[in-house]
Picture 1 (cartoon, rainbow, N blue to C red):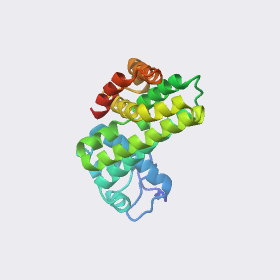
Picture 2 (picture 1 turned 180 degrees about the horizontal axis):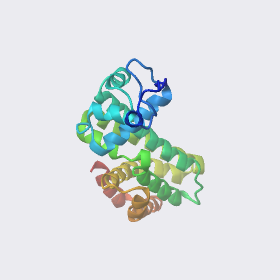
Picture 3 (picture 1 turned 180 degrees about the vertical axis):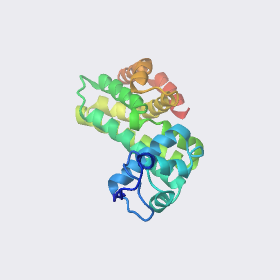
Picture 4 (picture 1 turned 120 degrees about the vertical axis):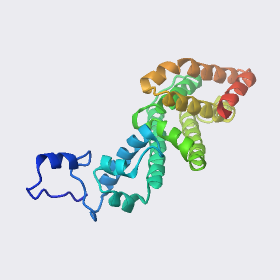
Length: 243
């Protein structure tokens, strides 16, 4: 990112107004490197999380990023395209966080694994840059586009769950039962609950405290499935998933 060189006649007050999280502001016609683009996306995501798509102006986004509006239009096309890119990035961060947590975990057995992966899925929805508040805004204000992203997120999270179980427990009969009969329903329920907790402005710690009973219920459902008693519990998870 090319920075504006201070020619020496700017006052400290004017310099302060021009500086933002990106440092000195870019002039019209200046280029933006990958780091600058990432910072614009982070600033935009933070602003959209606070005020949504319709409540955020291009002027506010440009000011927060320390760039002229013309630079924002040049690199992102429109406020709506910037919003969509920020939402896509938000989902990628959330899925990556879940992957990192499951890859580093050690489980004593399938039931413990299900409970801990469920907790990681729920709490990830309220964790910093991964918080699903931004995606919640998208589902409200750009529904058709965001609904497709949300379906893709469900599929990605299902993949993470199944991979984590397969890597720890191989092709065991119990693992197959959980992957087929539990995971699709548990993932939908965990994401729906996590999105709800994020909408209530819980952080990761608050979500973890709130989710204890919910996670225990998923563990009980897994245990019931493995013992052949899981049909009624699974139907309740399906209701939560559809909701």
